[in-house]
Image (cartoon, rainbow, N blue to C red; front, side, top):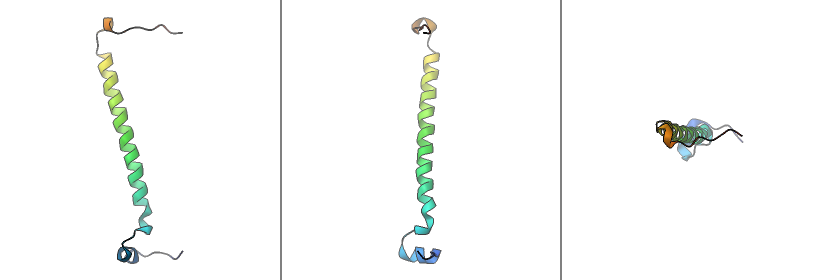
Length: 62
């Protein structure tokens, strides 16, 4: 496959030379999703810990 120049990519409307943009978007979306899920779990756990202790069922360790 011949080397691709940026001007040739721009003229063709395709971005085969810029494949890393797609990879960065996929990785960024995964990172944003992970942070969002961890954030939701963190706030959920904080709400559980804020409950009065008499309402929390204590489980014995096996």
